[in-house]
Length: 268
Length: 269
Image 1 (cartoon, helix red, strand yellow):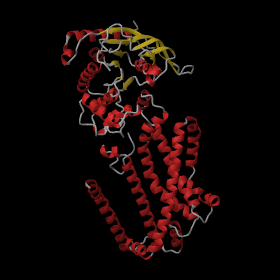
Image 2 (cartoon, each protein chain N blue to C red):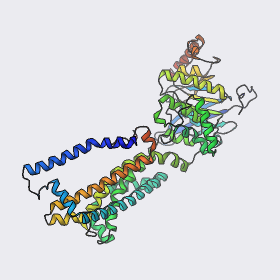
Image 3 (cartoon, rainbow over the protein chains, first blue to last red):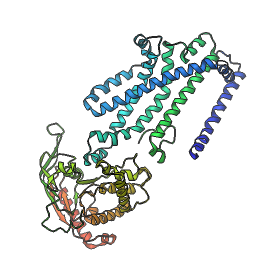
């Protein structure tokens, strides 16, 4: 309860800055007479948000579903591959350079090709883009957390006659949790971005990406902005979920004051 | 577990026998290193033996050979009459490092209970034992804390409690107090001596501190620079030590003897 209150009061400054920014935006657009199609006023964006709510809510939900399903698939794939490469060194030597090479490819550029592979009308190709984007940071960070273990800790476990599996369970996996959590903070909002960019290239027409492109195409920029607002709300929700998972999975970090701030990196 | 192992008399078999041991790292490659060679050493049950020498002399290597964390290139190591490997599998020794090596994600009590968990002890037995161990290292109220909430000296005491939790007959310590400040270190040394007296455990203690080796040990094994060989063994008999011992002329004499031996070693004598 005290924690909740602390969290809420921590949001105070952000709320003030956010509302102040919106007020400034509104004032600048009105004061300088900036044309609506260049930069709509926040008040007209909110108006469009209300007017088009059923469409936007549906689009937000659908895009969110693509992001979440692609995200989960990418997390599972990244974690599994990290576990496998840590367990079998030879695989690590073969797969890690390949994964780096794949990551150097701008994944969203593959969206049109994924459309050809997985079909342009269904959601599978969009989900595949999200999965491909999410996979790499999860894989690299988790693999690093699994291997970046203090040598004394491994020797200690060996002194208990512990085998590799026990060391994995008792040392490597808990050690990797903060690294995994950092990856999660990055990929949770990234999954929404990837989903929307993928939607620009194809897939069903009732999604955020298509709402943005079609309304921008008809110069209804305020509606496009309203869709962007929905997208950022979805991204924020996923980021909040990532933080929740992080805190719930690592009670020791809360107790020792680590992980309190939104920007804390992994272990030193 | 009896408490008279130390006074068991001359008939007792040695706790550790190291015979003709040599260790080469990266054998056959360009960065091959001969770490230790020609090591012969016998340690009696209940003895407190320190390994000291210039840095890089292989004292930690020797400790790891005893613990079967490294395998010797040549020679044999036996612990309690069996191979070092079997002794490790039987979990005959507890290990303490300079880095306390507590797991952040386990509470203090759960850290102490880890070796017991791996041995399949029941929850009730583990809880009882970790409470006893916390009393032994004078941290009775810290079982529910996480390691990072403790100071460095307290963490090291937990590491010692963890190493002792399953009542090993042998304690291997690799510069366990090296990272502590002087005051904490002196306190920890007394604690260790008290625990050693109470449990009758055999201790092999790696240190680079001359005063520490003189204060704690029955015997100080002085190693030469790489490749590490046993240069000489200094016998120390200071009886029951306390803080006054640190100002005892006999203690100073031993410290001087060890220092001069180390100088001779560095000069290649």
